[in-house]
Length: 414
Image (cartoon, rainbow, N blue to C red; front, top):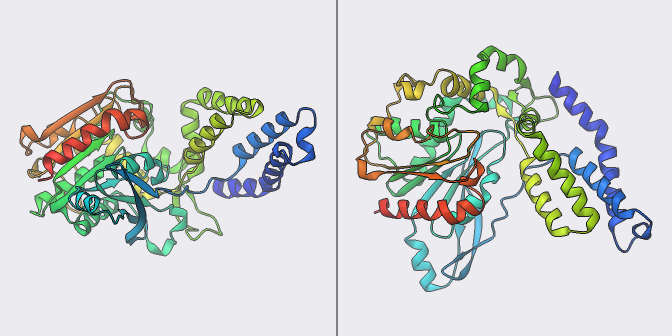
């Protein structure tokens, strides 16, 4: 019922949201007579703020159209290479007619970036992908909003997520592949590669695990405490709802994006309040540069997707309540998940010193579990002063983390 009420409220608010957008344009457009009225800049700023706080945010485009390689601007084309009901495997292919650049691109390592399915769209990793494209052939898992997946396509649980990762690795070709898992997928990626190794299948050359809860018992955060403080039934009864019409996934049980978004805001409400106040002040002052930076950030931050209920509840139970991976008790389809079976992949873990989502030590725990990998092929990086997002996006990612990741992949690619 909550989902239906949310949709009803959204429909009722729509006229006022559009009116606020129109007013902001009327009172800010220099060619409009209204922009010359006293206080016009405050009226325009207030209306734009109301519009942005109330409007729907669709999935942003990747908008990666070119990348600089060896001082050359190289066009980039987004290609869907494989599609499953809940995910698209996307390749960002670089094109050039410069002979020297063609030779350089041909020899670049292949990378699969496994994006998190944890509320935001995969486009949250735009900076990660754009940076990787300088020196790599890049594939990305682009997860589909569960409310857009017809109910007849069936359920999607954590085991299905792992099967998807295995299929993507096989499709690209593990012999030449390096996998980067960001946040939530660290656990299912480690499980997928463990299962493939135990079966004797080829595995990726290297694994880069960034800010994920391999062992959520270590340095627990507010996210971990929420999961351990409440039984699984609490999550079933309080956050799982049914997709209403007219969405293609009507009837599907999901953890709705609007509830996840409310949770994100509740983690630090004062910071978001001050950010919106600063946005209003920038508009009044005419500081369009800072105002546009605010728009870009919240266009991404406010765009959320519904997660399949089965997957969400499986993750809560397996990763955050029963800690099956670090305890050696996890089975997927009857097969034991044994990270020690991995022998032919190199392993790098990355953590942020100030990460308030995956605490220090939670990702590094993968090294102890992957005892079959020779010690010289283990590497760890703790990024000083970085929070959760800082290890894969922004200045610290580009200047501190990426060079280490690039060099690690290059060393283990041959």
